[in-house]
Image 1 (cartoon, rainbow, N blue to C red):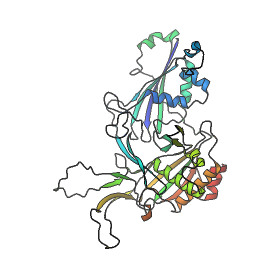
Image 2: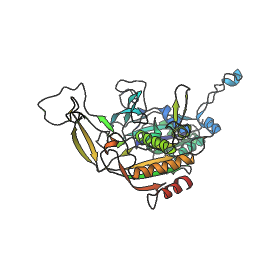
Image 3: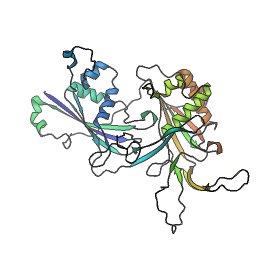
Image 4: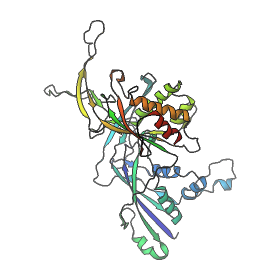
Length: 423
């Protein structure tokens, strides 16, 4: 042991982070907390992400170590484990920094936008903007250089990363010690409080050549109905308060910014692509691109297409009181009066990323063509997102399209197909 290198990571959330715990006190899956009841990013999650970035198994073993698990091998070989040259530490929130944890209320829908039986669930996430500080320790210069190279790649943390969660921006500081000349300095160094003697380094995070990033600038053409309920059935109502409180409103961040989650976008495009191709939403070709989980057979495949969360900007909030009308008597139905808060005239961006999954072929060309058709149908108002789409909610106009940050001349199918399928 004659060398040590330390990395101090600054991990800023660009989208909500979902790292679940086994505890389900408030939701079906609460975020992981430390002893101070603050969210953390476990070291195992960070190590797993960095390991997954390396496709070469021999290089993985060299830096991350391994434990043979083949029970059929020779007993002497079976205990020949290799220790990792990299040590990862939990990433935690700096003292005094604020953060926000919100609950996402979800339900799986079938092709008719009807809730599936037993598919209702909710989970907690740490909202974007929070900053975590983590550490990596390397025992060799080769492993330290490997970490620095890995930091140049874009990473996502936690679950649902192909649906807009866990996008992060990482910057770092590095401190190296050569024990042949800096042993005393190393003994005085505190990884958690020591002076790294440098400014934060921001990696370039260049786009991988096998990825296609489609960025749509969207203009809202009607109200939006992706609900989060604003009333608490346990709340004691004060009859002296005359302020009108909505029963539900648009899904929003804690600061009030309305959002369209990546899960909603993925469901919309998956369903519409299936209709364009004349097949079911869980056809084998659809599953190969959008991913799937088969709990009965214990098999799964990660999605090759990712949808980021969209935040609505410059929108107008409106409170509407509605009721249901009996079609026979033309009178109001008993108990059918409710108040909703919705948003109009917003502007947002949707980013769709098509990538080559590890060991898998690129997305099927017919799926990509159907994706182009779906984008054009969204632009022309033939499909809408969220609920109440039959009464004009969830419609958007596509103002512009960029492919890997290169703008298209116009929103036309021929240009989309050329850039996405052939470009």
